[in-house]
Length: 275
Ligand SMILES: NC(=O)c1ccc[n+]([C@@H]2O[C@H](COP(=O)([O-])OP(=O)(O)OC[C@H]3O[C@@H](n4cnc5c(N)ncnc54)[C@H](OP(=O)(O)O)[C@@H]3O)[C@@H](O)[C@H]2O)c1
Image 1 (spheres, protein in one colour):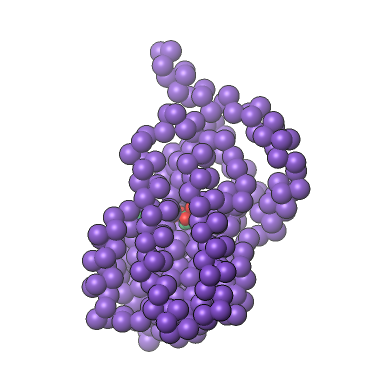
Image 2: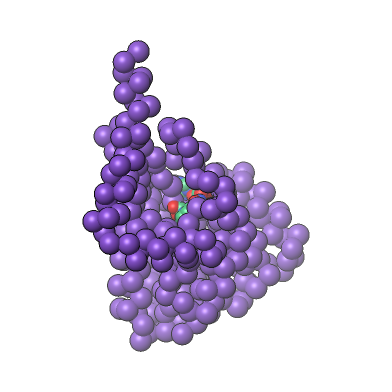
């Protein structure tokens, strides 16, 4: 089954940067209406101007919202009722991570991550899926991560949130399979975006650049897979290979290898405290 992407009204979260920004560009030529959601309104206005240059007939709605707040999501959906009474497609892309040993993580940031990556995504889906099922037409694309299918010390809470997204999406896909609603997920490996800066990597090393793909590449492959109704999309051959390899490796071996490098997670904070 394929989602009704052509001439659709699409609500896209996390449109102000990275993968979401690139997805908006990809969708601009085929959608009827794009609803751009994120907190930074000025970025969304700039994106709107770019999209209208590509397609002057596109309806673009700038909808600033902090998706960690379910009351703000309620307000957003109420405001949208007049301009976009029917939402055909929901793309839950907004999300962020945090890098470092779990115990040193800032609790407020971890809580916001859970509120956005899990609660916001689930709440928006809960509000929008019923009308789709009743119309027997709709599509939901959740942006999970390669970490939704694997694990990595230094990303404990982020990995947890993405395992949630992956499990949630698989269940939901099965639940609505007979009702004309396509539920898919994309599990990207490393993508060059603002993600790492926001995750505040305290380590001396970051993701090797040869593993990264561009946000445009990620968006293109994600939407192509979604248009085909695929359950799980992994953009880029390197990420596909890494996931295939990690699934092949016995878990005890993976745990052993990953534990070996984990002491480095404590280095930045321990050297701070000994000053
Ligand atoms: N980059 C990677 O390597 C990678 C790999 C796998 C999966 N992913 C996933 O891909 C998705 C997009 O990430 P990205 O890499 O494109 O990161 P990004 O460049 O940092 O973009 C994140 C987007 O989320 C929005 N956002 C953050 N907090 C929000 C909030 N409270 N309410 C509403 N919107 C919020 C941001 O907009 P505002 O700041 O304007 O609100 C921004 O538009 C995320 O779910 C991420 O977990 C990324």
